[in-house]
Image (tube, rainbow, N blue to C red; front, top):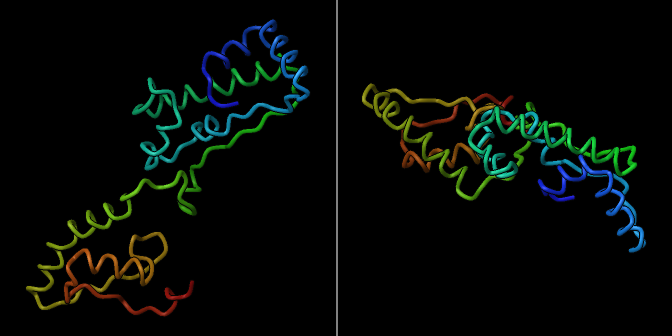
Length: 180
């Protein structure tokens, strides 16, 4: 069931509504096996860096307020529990949220331009520092490492382009970090 606040609340509070719904779908020759709160479940536990990305899954009135969004999501799950009971369902499907997953996989999908913007900002932060090293005649050697924006050859090349191919921006050679 797509997020439908009025129907969710109504199903949680009205046995008559649920009975009518069950009768309608039975006449159509189908049945409800479970309700789903995948997106609401995802909002129970959002890694803070992803707040803006996940706001799109919440009711407009709680967007921009992570605490309110979490409480809203919990409320949606509680409504779904009651609606499931009224519909005679014994199972419900959802997501758990993702406090650690952002370290492993980009979900939700990144909006267009996000990575480019991040590298532009990274270059903006580092360019003046690299210039100071250049004035001192010293190379800045970045250790390519998982968990860093510069973690492989592709990301280093992107950064190097963002700092204008600066001659002082280099890779620290550590063969152990070149294993994928």
